[in-house]
Image (cartoon, rainbow, N blue to C red; front, side, top):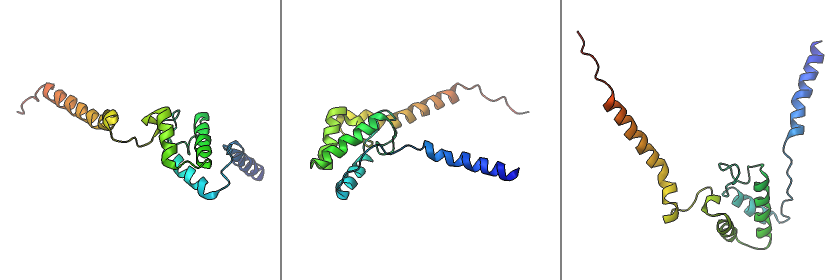
Length: 136
């Protein structure tokens, strides 16, 4: 009975492999260009997942963006040209690390502004708290 149970568990664990995401794109034939494309894909944000690169995402849009990157690299575009093309099309948001420029100052400053607001809220709460009763 224990052998049957062990075999059943092993089969269930192995079926997880069947549900793995298949690679649906054809890599570039030139390994140097494919390496360039993959390195660039690490820097491009999946617009659906928002916190993943298109290399790591399984979203349909990420697959389309990977295809665009490969096509443009295959045509001879440099990674900088492909990045510029995607920024022109989708804006700075498509980059995982957007450049620091006047249009992105708020984006870069927002974590610090958030921390400042939290500090102000905590200070106000402490100030508004009633004083502790005197000890006897």
